[in-house]
Image (cartoon, rainbow, N blue to C red; front, top):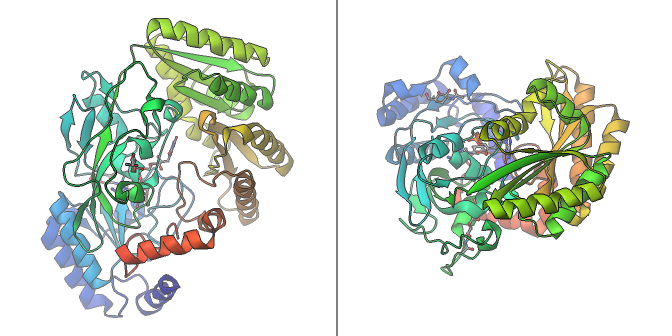
Length: 500
Ligand SMILES: Cc1cc2nc3c(=O)[nH]c(=O)nc-3n(C[C@H](O)[C@H](O)[C@H](O)COP(=O)(O)OP(=O)(O)OC[C@H]3O[C@@H](n4cnc5c(N)ncnc54)[C@H](O)[C@@H]3O)c2cc1C
Ligand SMILES: *[C@@H]1O[C@H](CO)[C@@H](O)[C@H](O)[C@H]1NC(C)=O
Ligand SMILES: *[C@@H]1O[C@H](CO)[C@@H](O)[C@H](O)[C@H]1NC(C)=O
């Protein structure tokens, strides 16, 4: 409510100004000059083109651009900028790589957008402890390139080459989560600039403890066994906070040993049910699969065209196995038996690195392959996640609803986690179609909640899922979140209008 009122005052008195008190002109210049004094004149822009570029992500959410964009060069500058904005009552929007799918960087109330890409150091690589510290300008691919000859890698891989701190902010995951966990499981510490400008290390300065290394166990069994009983889990609070509680200026990440051998495989199925049943059976048989991704016939067709693959157009699983040569033979054999038992055919292996990367590049580009189905249209992605036992029914039902709706949509999912996306294509100029797409997404979100799942497995709440969040966590849950937010950000200036 307070936020709504504030938004109203803002809109009435200053339109798009920097200040809600109606002193627009003069304060505006004084304020921008103060920003320049912190970061240096070349690192501040008020040009409309630059602001518009920073006012949107990859989703179809649109609103006004920020009033000004700044490029801090280090954490001290972030801290000073934040304190400055806070004392002037100006909203702050952290900007990573803008690949978000929930409108997280939209400047709902205008304000200062912080493009954090100039802070791009990789420090404190610790090969014995399997940890590394990255600044917000470091992307997942840049980190893995840096690690190339170290024998270690970072497995969390959203389709885009997102910033790792942005991934922490949205609680991202990707195709490897079924074995290596999500961002949540792979963050040991976060350095955060709080709205007050103070610096917080969520696990304490410099700490990066993690469990011992048990190479014979799949990573899954190691997860969660890192020991610390030191009070509330502040790291967990900031993972998935979507820039609404503070700015993440460094993340200590947990690394993993590069597997001795890797094999990928694809397998086509006669029905959605058969593909998803196979997934459930593979997991129940405790095959330590590293990746298991589902693509429906529409998605498979789109990927064939967009990425020049040659797969059968049918419900398909993309799989990958990691381990010793000997373990792989066993895993593959077990998986092939299970898929055959479920009517799977065309089980084909890809052992060469080049072939595997082609397959996973196609999977990572599924979003763009889907967009190419209706050129000129925008994509709207759902992101539900359910307990694995409920996955077959929700997927089969969603596929039927999609057919009945007359909408164009493709289904692709990290089915090993119970998480899938329905990428719906919508003509942004057609409000009626947009309305139907939103209704479809809401209905799917509610179905997931009814099956004890969540409305978002990895993209976050952003602008579009706030109502669903309320239904998901309930009145007391939302009230507790509001109180936490009000404690850390009493003036409601950190990325306003998101999540709550
Ligand atoms: C082709 C494609 C495929 C994708 N596949 C996946 C996928 O498989 N899994 C998945 O999880 N996501 C996926 N995404 C979504 C997106 O990549 C993730 O949400 C990613 O984590 C966003 O990171 P970013 O740096 O681009 O964040 P941005 O889009 O810049 O920001 C996202 C949110 O985080 C906040 N934020 C960013 N940086 C910081 C910071 N340093 N401190 C505080 N807050 C911050 C922003 O304010 C905003 O609210 C995909 C997107 C695309 C376009
Ligand atoms: C953020 O800044 C970097 C470095 O200047 C630039 O390459 C990038 O395009 C900027 N982001 C946007 C959305 O303009
Ligand atoms: C705290 O939360 C982080 C992120 O969710 C997680 O990685 C870590 O294991 C948690 N720590 C404890 C002691 O539970």
